[in-house]
Structures are given as C-alpha cells and as structure tokens.
Amino acid sequence: MKTFYLPAKDAFVNHNTDAPVIAIKPFERGYYPIYTSATADDLNRGKYTPEVLESALSASMFGWNTPAARAAVDYIQSIEKTEATA
Image 1 (cartoon, rainbow, N blue to C red):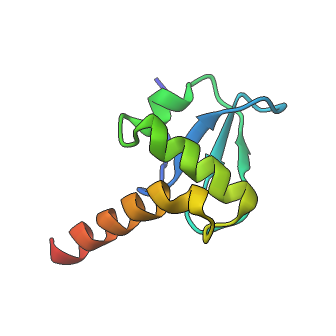
Image 2 (cartoon, helix red, strand yellow):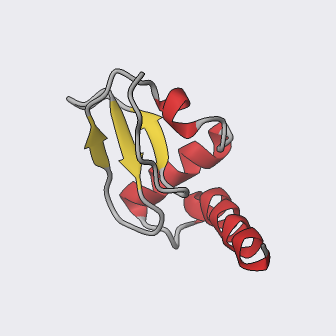
C-alpha cells in the first residue's frame, strides 16, 4: 500500500483531465494533477461532503470569493477554528 502525504485541508476530485485525480488547495486558483492509482475518495478519507467538493472545484476555477465557493470556505474556516481551539 502506498503512503501519501496529504495536507489536511487539500481536497481531491476525480476530474476529466489527463490525470485521474486533481488536488484543490484552499484559496488557490487552479488545481494540481495527481497521478496515482488511488481514487479521490481514498485520498479524501471521508473528510468532505459532495457539496463541499463541488464547491471547492468551482472555487478553484472561478474564485474563492464567489457564491459557489461558500460551502468550501465555510468548511475550511470551521476546520481552522477547530484547530485553533485544540
């Protein structure tokens, strides 16, 4: 089994690109191809709902300050708040 280093807030999405999976980094425009045999679900480990993933994908393409980004931004901010109080 392969071991992956996954930053806690990165989201992974199956996408129609030359790479089977893409990584979305919070508050960054664009996405990064991931060449792996693992699926996006394996890499996400159940951290995100489909709504948050769709929102993050939209945000990476159209901006993190758009209405489509709201679910992803809210989720990321809730993680940051939880980490700050832990």
